[in-house]
Length: 206
Image 1 (cartoon, helix red, strand yellow):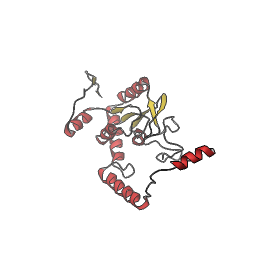
Image 2 (spheres, rainbow, N blue to C red; image 1 turned 180 degrees about the vertical axis):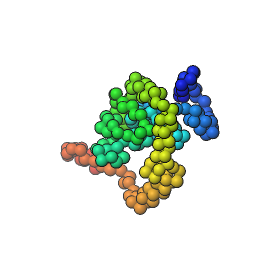
Image 3 (tube, rainbow, N blue to C red; image 1 turned 90 degrees about the vertical axis):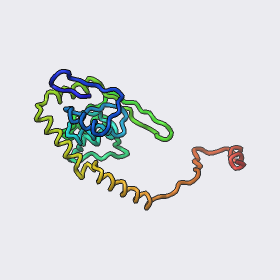
Image 4 (cartoon, rainbow, N blue to C red; image 1 turned 45 degrees about the vertical axis):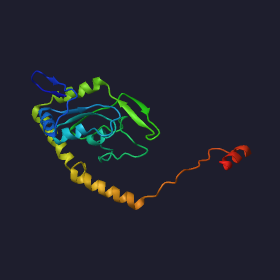
């Protein structure tokens, strides 16, 4: 989606396929990038928008939170843990100046056997509209400044989003996997309650 100060204000593309050069042109024609999908793993279009020097509007879910660079109470980039796996409840509000977050207003828990749980965070379209308006109301110079800030951070060693840094990470964690690899057993017996004598006999006979 692209919007601007002069009509027509909004262009919505169909399911067209664009080559990288065309995508770069579209990003550079835009004032900002927006992605409010739910249970989003990363949201590559946000990264692409930031690399093109654009502020972003994003739903606070999945990897989009990383790209908004939320800060904890010490001013550090939030580190997610098993106890704190997502900021979708809005525990932390401060984020990179290039980011205009949309906190989800309802959530559901979905999943499967391979993926035990995924938070399906859904944004209210009115909250998204408010952030679009916030960027629309900025002076062009300020939008450009925020976009430059987005690009500078995306290229930084902290963000680790450049091809060089991502390659270093891949090498690091492949090496770590080889160094710490412990093969899984073919199967596990997990005892959840005492078995009767008859049940024990049946299990042994198997």
